[in-house]
Image (tube, rainbow, N blue to C red; front, side):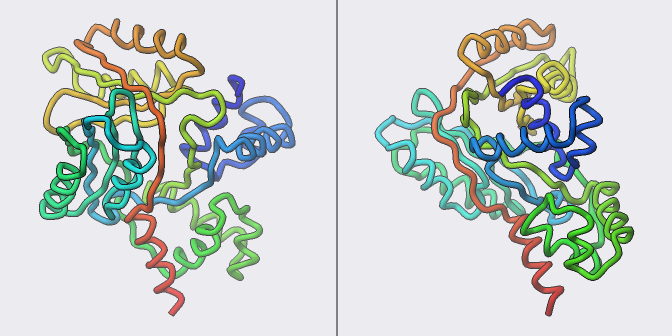
Length: 301
């Protein structure tokens, strides 16, 4: 990927409904050239698909980021799949030194306890570092039957053009555009590109960042990561219990990885940076996505 591919990929992760024309105007190349670049990202497996997620506020969902330290006796692929067998786990990865990272969602303290117990008792796990995450996005929105009506074809193809949605639903294109605009205005739904970490030449890694609470808030560090590393940054997980952030980033090679880590460490508010390099990564079903599918199916009855 060149610099433009990386920027387009970042845009689609934030909103995969951006049209070829919108991206064309932003980057100063033809819509056909944008289309070819996106097709190339898809064909090379860098974009593994597209999805729709309801905001956590819509479902009352809490989130957890976990690091599991193991004795290194397990096969990485099998271990990631076992971690993902929990109905709460959304994604899991193997990392260097027998470490596994995961992101999970839950509802209430009972589910959180159940999830923690499951992770701590997995075969070969020595210790589990579990952090509830703050900084969830979005707000509540009442989804009417008409909203759910246009979401039905969008669940199959989140990038489906307005005209095609109108044709499939029998609504006018103007009304479809207004309804989708309501999703975006309320930040109740996100239309996202699913990026396959490690596809192509990318090298995914996690940095564990400790910062000085006396000189900065967590938002200072999170904003710095997005501003300073826009094409490298993927996700930020902010612990609710201590001044630590886990940031998922990608680099082209080990040299670039080292440069990014050194740069983060030089930040005046950062006190410590540790790195884990990813191996095998896998996504699993999301409660919020399954909930949305159920709502759409119920509206058809």
